[in-house]
Image 1 (cartoon, rainbow, N blue to C red):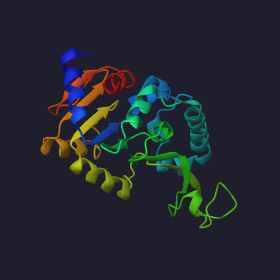
Image 2: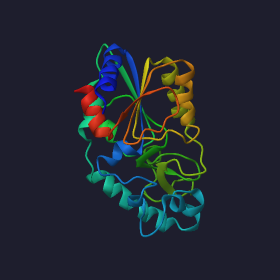
Image 3: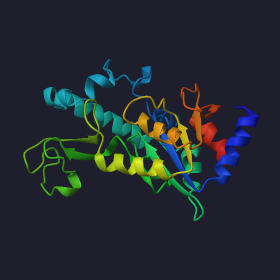
Length: 236
């Protein structure tokens, strides 16, 4: 991590009153959660793209549920790292911090972040594949089936599905109102999530990227390091 870039990033953070942290798989990887597209994301030879789809669930529900059971066990065993914790500590009466995350594991919330927008849903809840109601909203006793007759599934966004509109609107609002964006552990190239950074770039909001191999093409200040190391240094 370059000394001059780090000093500039720290100064930007000190002057920020509304920080948006946009986080992806690299943030959770430092807690031991396998990434989707890396070699460690394989399960019994299957790629995530083969299992995280409505078609896969409809054709082999048990296999998909078994995969998510394994993923939930991994998430339950993982702990927020010091980068998660440092970000949560930045919430003060003088500074608003909103986390927009592509992760579904709840590690930001467990670390203490109170304003978290989950663009891809949460692996910690179940919802009906037919009507969309979450398990908390449905009083039927069978944990596998909704009272409407639909099968319960993980409350995440699968390939081919749209992002939840409420979360998306909240993310757009936060990006448009913030004065600094921190991009951590994500390539931020997959649409529509990538368009959030285009909003920031258009509004000339400073962007700090923390990635082992920086990838953003927007005018940004880049810190080439893992999420846990970059955030620990930035926030002290």
